[in-house]
Length: 193
Image 1 (tube, rainbow, N blue to C red):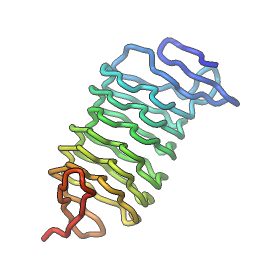
Image 2: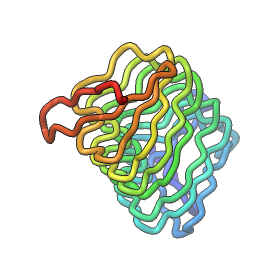
Image 3: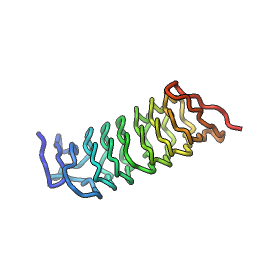
Image 4: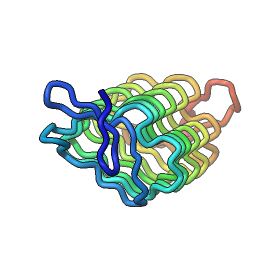
């Protein structure tokens, strides 16, 4: 059963709420920690997708999961704070949004498919220790991403993770790397001199 408040559609199951859709008009959005005495623990898939009017989003410490494509194509979204309570982030969450920076909360092991795909304004991402895998196309077409520091725990970087990141320098284990753009061919990472 989907319920609605002034700004959100949501579901409640076993005392926990999932935001299923943002229906408000505010450019600055604060997701509530509680709705109808139910703790908000999830931002559902596509909950804010394709909202060109959203600029800033605050997610409370009650949220543990951000669903796939939750902020996809939010073309004005500049700032979003993801609290340390978030232990799982779906695929394509920020795809083609206007975010400029992101601090991934600790507790993530995998950065999922197309997480930041096409984020042209993205310049800085902080990836915590514990992340062991970067899936396909996570940073593809992030034209302005200049420096990315990978955690020491990284064990797998899947194909096209950095496709068309023409200005990217990767720093890993105190060794500096640059990414060679190879178009649609899975990329390579070469030691910089």
